[in-house]
Length: 57
Image (cartoon, rainbow, N blue to C red; front, side):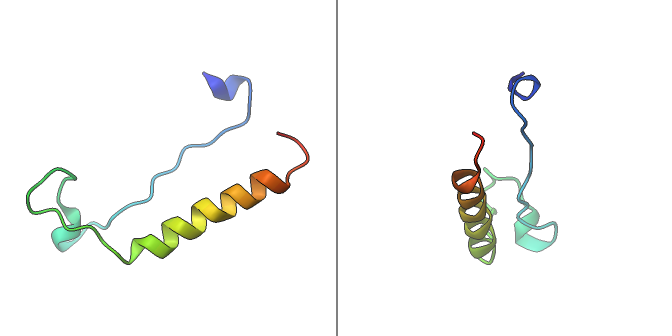
């Protein structure tokens, strides 16, 4: 496990639990929740900024 050598984390960005957003990913009834795009984008951008500005890699 890499986290035994380097600190790490695991996270899930959910797509909702009600209505069409609660369908399984590969279901023909699946409807991606577009409102999540800014949230996910902000998360990844903040993570990249944090890692790139850190003195330790």
